[in-house]
Structures are given as structure tokens and as C-alpha cells.
Length: 285
Ligand SMILES: [Zn+2]
Figure (tube, protein in one colour):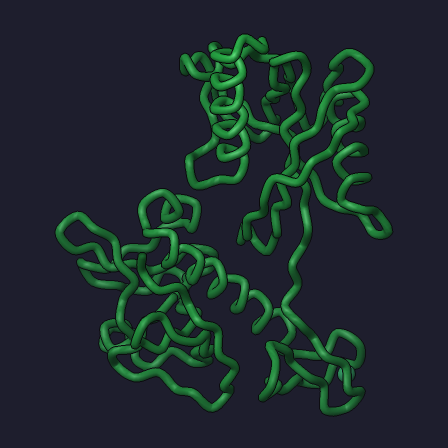
């Protein structure tokens, strides 16, 4: 398995031509297309085209290479072998360890540029030499990268799964429910509240499944299974436009379009399908 990014804090580090450059034009990342494969470009490749972009933020090491996050102007001329693509598009084509590094790079830039000035007193901030923070030399406030927790849950009822169409989704695209955690809530309370608000039902038996960093722009998706306990499905009409119970064979047969395989939403659904087929072979459903 390929090496994962090893994060290192070093505000003095500066990029060399062979360093890997996770470069973003707005929210789109620069990649090299060579022989039909997308790769992360070297810093030297970018600086030849664009000069030395300001503010290359050191991320750490990936194998034997230093990695930097940097912003480039939107619409910059990138020649013929560089492309810019949305992180979501890249999630399905780049290997997992590079995507994790790209997600971290994007969120690092969000933090770096978003806290250039102290949010409390307006003074320009300085990079901490010991932690991933920008500190204010006037009031002492520390500004860390913000990660926003969101719960995502697969609700089941007697062998069926609740899947919903979101207003933002085009076409027959169904997924599990999800929503942001509110201040003061436990994760379990957030799961119950979101399912209640969006689908009008009560749930119980909330079980942790796994989590996924979701850099759109800075979420941590925390996945759960939950079981319907009372009520009939009634969508809220604002976020969800349709929600129904589906049997495993309907989901497996491709009657509906599911989230991409890189997402925790899909991993929840695939895990449920796998468990359903084991249960049916045992005669449980
Ligand atoms: Zn301050």
C-alpha cells in the first residue's frame, strides 16, 4: 500500500522543484494528465508556468517527498498537460492516499487564508511553529483549522433501508440521510433529530459505523446505523423531496442511482447489502 501523508509543522519549510504541489484554483485542484492517468504535479512544473506562487503552506511528507498546499489564480494558463478538476471528480480517480492528502491540503488552505487576520481583534496573525494554528500577536488568540462534524445514518426497518432524494440531487439519485451536529448535542442526539426533522420518524439502536473526512469544504462525516422505532415517513419538503423504504434486491438491482464508491454513504449502503444477503442466506429475512 502506498504511503500516507505524514503531517509535519514547519513554517520555515520552502518548496523545491521535486516537491509535490497540491495547488488549488478556487476549489479546483491542479493535476497532471499523463498517459490517461492523473497525478499530483511537482512544484517545479507549476513554478515554470506560474512563477513562484506566494504562500506555499508545508503539509508534511508523502514517502520521500515534501508536500505543499498552494493557491493559484483562477483562470491561470496551465499549458497543455495540466488540468484543474473539482475534488469530487478527483475522488473517483486518484488513489486513496493522494485524495486524503488533497483533502487535507484544501482544508489547510481554507484555514490559512481564512485566518490571515485575527477574528477577535483584526491583527494579522502569525503561523505557530509547534501546532497547526495561526496565533494573534496582539490578543493571543489561536486560530485552528475548523472541522465541522456531520452525522450520516442508514436507517433500517424489517430488512428495508430508508433512502432519500435530496433537492440538490439531479435525477434518480438516492442516498442515506445526513446533517450537521448542533452545539450541545451528542452524535446520537444529532442522528435522532436529523432523521426526525427530515423524514418524520423516530429511531433507536444507534450504532457507530465509521467516519470519513469530507473536504467540501471541511466536514467530518460520522456514520451510523439506526433502526426505525415509530412513525411513518414524511419528508420535510425543503431538504428532501422523497424518501422511501427499499428492499435489498431493489438496491442491488440498480433500480436507483447510489452515491459514488468513495463515499461513506455508499460504504454504509454496501455494508447493509452485504449483511442483508448473509441474513437472507441464513433465512432471517
Ligand atoms: Zn487578536
